[in-house]
Every structure is written in structure tokens, then in C-alpha cells.
Image (cartoon, rainbow, N blue to C red; front, side):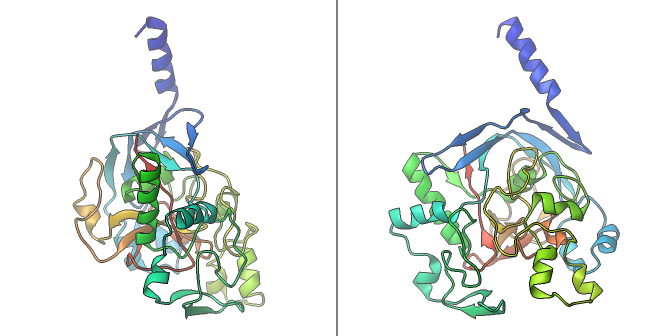
Length: 330
């Protein structure tokens, strides 16, 4: 490498090391964004290492979020070092309804709900949570979903089928992110509750979550302090799903990693997996009953939107809050 190029390389790497607590992430000042054949934007996520899991003790979290179930916290421990050894591309946004329908029509695909005929959970027109066979990604019934909203009512199997179709279409490897890749990308160098810090009230700038807009829609006259504590006091402007990219991105240039819709990951779920996880590129347990979901949804309290929050559902689960984003390997 010529001397001046070596100096440039050293300067860029030195300038861009981000240290947040024990996390060390090297990234460019501006994210590298590419656009694929279905007009999906993907951001290059650099290799690096971070501390995976809850960044504070259960007592502190319970004080801030008194309504959370303490058992949920057990799955977020122990905090442990994870190293992502290769860079990868990740969808800058959640997969939109428009992008999913391109796959649906091109592949002549039938979503799992159409194949098995089983009902899904969702909101009826009056806002009541019901189980019905009527719910579809293009018709959540309670609200009008637009083409630029995250696709919902997709199972883990539907999400994997989308990735397989896109891989074949482009001759590249598309897949769901591992749980470790997802948290690494969500944190983007942060060692705190959220990619932007610890204050839940700041979520209205970065996420579509349970806010005063939703509180006023469903519980306008409630004086129940416990209920009201589940909602941030500010307004994010959306009661239901929001168009992707409406809020601020994290430091990697990714949008909606907090809120809007839960995102499927490739891993099987195990409450106790962190205690035996490998350091380099963990891919989760070899088997299990449920698959990992991350990020929280438009209806969720701030506790569920934390970087460390783990959730899971059966791979066949489809409801109003489940979506996904893709990873493309180099």
C-alpha cells in the first residue's frame, strides 16, 4: 500500500473507533448504503465486538420499569462479549408491504395463514383484540396499512421464504439476522438501554412505540397511574404502524430498530443460551420450540424496546406486530 494510502487508512480507522463502555466498533463516518433489485436499501455493518445482554441490573430496571415481569430479565443475562467477525449488509428499514408483495406475486407464494387457514391475533375495527382468519399483511382491519409500512402478519417461515426468493433472484445470500447480529446492529456502539441512551422519553424521536397518541386513542379518560406509566408522555404521531424511516436512525444508519414492529431473527430461542454462547458469531441453540423476535412494536411499552430485550414466538405465529428485516452477506 503506498505511504499516503496507509496514512489515510490509519486516520480513518483511528478517527472512527467508537467506544461506548466496553464496546469497540469501527465504522465509517457516513454509512455505506446500497440499493438492490427490489429497491431495498441496505447498510454495510462493520465487523466488531460488543457486550450482549442487559447493561444494568434487575433492581435498576425494575425501578425504572416497575410493570415489567422480572422473569423476562433472566434471559438477558449474563452480559457477555460477542465478536462479529465479518461485515455484512442489513436492511436499512424493515421489509415493507410493497417489497413483500413483490415476492408474493412473483413467486406465486401463499403466506402460511392462507395455507393452514388458522386464525391470527389482531385488532378489530373498534380496537378490540380478537382472533380471526380475516387478518392479512395487506389488511390489518383496524387501520389502513400503506405500501411503505413494515409488512406484518408474517410468520418466521414466511420471512425465510422471502429471503430464499431474494437470494435466488439476485444470486446472493439473503437471510434473517442472527440474534447477535441484530443486537450488535441495534446498539451501533451503544452500551445503554437504547441506541441513543437511557431515557425512555427520547423514544418519540427514534421509534414508533406506546406513546400519548396511543394512550389517548384507547384510554383517553384513564387516571390509572400504572396504566399510564406504560406509555411515554410525548407523541410520536402514530397510533398504529408508521411508514418505515419516519424517525431518527441509529449511528449505523439503521431505522426503526426500536419499535414499529418486532423483527424475526434466525435463532432458536433459549432463556439460558447466554450462559453458554460462543464469543465469535453465535448463531443460537441447535434446536428449540420458538424463534427469536427483537425490537418491540408500535404498541409496546418502553421496556420492550430496549436493545437487550428478548422475545420469541412459534415459527408459525403471525400477528399484527411481527415483521422482519434482512441481512445480505458479502
